[in-house]
Length: 406
Image (cartoon, helix red, strand yellow):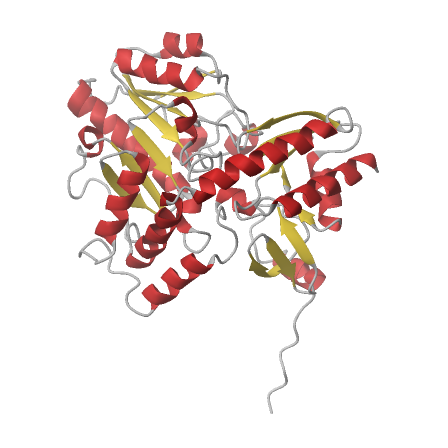
């Protein structure tokens, strides 16, 4: 008779990872086994309110019923064909995503970093074929403090030495300017510029919200210079800031938008490059691709995500609860919080370094049943699922107040 399998404890599971997993992450010591909505549960049955939401990959909460139903239904029919063939889910996904974002065409990919790499390739090809930049001379202007992923090309224009150190030689063709500085951006653009690639809000840097008018200024500068505005909305997009896209706060329409994270509903990796026909139309068969990009399972889940956003419910929730988030954080200024930046249900909170590092604050909140994640120094990020209730949100901020006071 086979002996029953003993469920290992959190401590045992963490120890078991040490010799077999590459140490490219430093997670908090919580081992999640189950989740529903805004809550997760560890292997011992302890419950935590998730105030990170997978860096916005879980905008609709854990296991949203509509998304789970879409995935289950598709699993019973078809999961993968590769792009060697058509599938019956991709057209609807592309049509509805293009309409939602106000763009013409969709290039489906898998991860956010893939979307960024694809956006870079498309911008360069457009520069050579449409703008007339001489071969191999195209440049792309990016911002200091950016985070667009961790592939070799992307870290080539990162200013985070942890992401860069030891991974050279780096890909040329990028110019780095200060974020939120239109004069510096204008000075960096010339006849070789294919695109300006920026995050409308810099997430990894600590939820850095630019001044009003900055995004509109980027749009105007790129229009005048005849180059592309590529907006990386992988973290900021799909409802997080109270609008479908963060650029909508300034009524800006980029030439290209990069999407990911929430597009897969927290179920499968789904990303996309959406843009004008003149831009994405430069790609021809064989020049770019992905075996899994646009697979039927991803398209089914992605379509269900778009359907949720088409109602406007989640954008409105993020805006309304975002006001609650700001109210609670305002009350903590001078009481352990030095400063904060917020847009919708997304905030970067700078804690007094005398109280603790961002990591230490995150660990203390974990012991209170609240999950957040630190970024640089003494900054923590708050990005709860858009399904969080007002009571849950206020309880999480009350726990932060308790931790700061202690």
